[in-house]
Image (cartoon, rainbow, N blue to C red; front, side, top):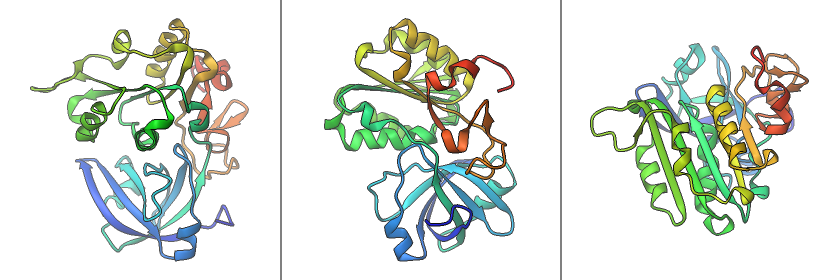
Length: 277
């Protein structure tokens, strides 16, 4: 993409209803040359533009080596996403991107990888989980921790079960409220840290979700002697322009859209415990 402010046309190839309020769009550029040139890193996001309605920042959840399509999983939370929920195969919309800094996957090679996510914010880390699973030989132990408020909020249950069967992989799932036959932990996901089996000295941790959960998780990780430079967080803020101009996502002296959304913990540490940032 040559102009960061101009959306390009893309087509919905497939729409998947993940839950009553969450859906996935599988997309491709209508211009084959643009599609062939499109590259992204797990953790980056696109600006999706619903013509006549507006634009929203949405994480890319597909694998960067999937040349056929790229995917966005979207939760209905407002006017634009409500309109996108009505899209079907063959419909067109616009896209700008990719934007932002992704996960530190080169640094994570030959190390234990721990992925922690809470609430419905799992989409930004699904791409990195799939990336590691598809290239399992490049990484050591993989630990996936997912917390949700209610067990009905957990999407991709089959994926979590399938990931748990991968070699040298540990999956820990928790819901604050568990329905009948809920097979995993009832309570906060951070209560499961005692079950985590990693080599703290060789671990790289990536997390996203509610900042309260991430604060507790960071405290646990530091107590386990995970070095703070090996902890990465995806920060969520309202990103309107994606290029650091509008200021809606400003985080101290940084812009989440341009300098993030993935930050190393030392980068955000001075503001992380301060309310209002």
